[in-house]
Image (cartoon, rainbow, N blue to C red; front, top):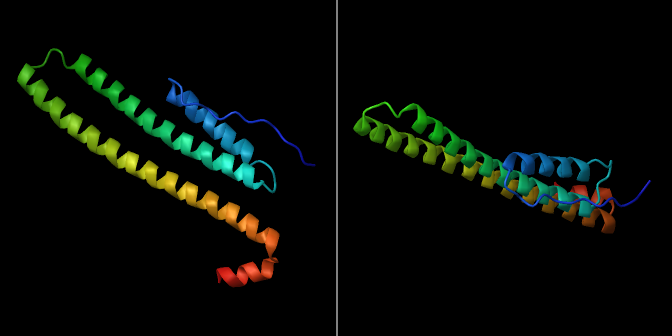
Length: 138
């Protein structure tokens, strides 16, 4: 049973949690068919990239929320001690965000590579028999 179902990719609005959920739903929907088409795989790869960016945005938002909570809870501390702790926390948060962002970028690159490989494999399968493809991959 073939057909076409319109899929709307999330635009990355103000709520990264909602964007993440929508991107994951689109990715699952695109990969739901037993034999996803190259277009389905392309949409799934794009949804994965949007999901990765939403995860990075969410991590940034959570870091900001933690910073705000830390600021509110520490108002009664000595100003110099507080400033030093905040600088140290900001450095740790920044390092953690950069590390997480690099991980997410690596995942996005890998996701894109896999999507391209799937599309290439699909195109090769259309033009050659399976045995010769396996011979080339070996």
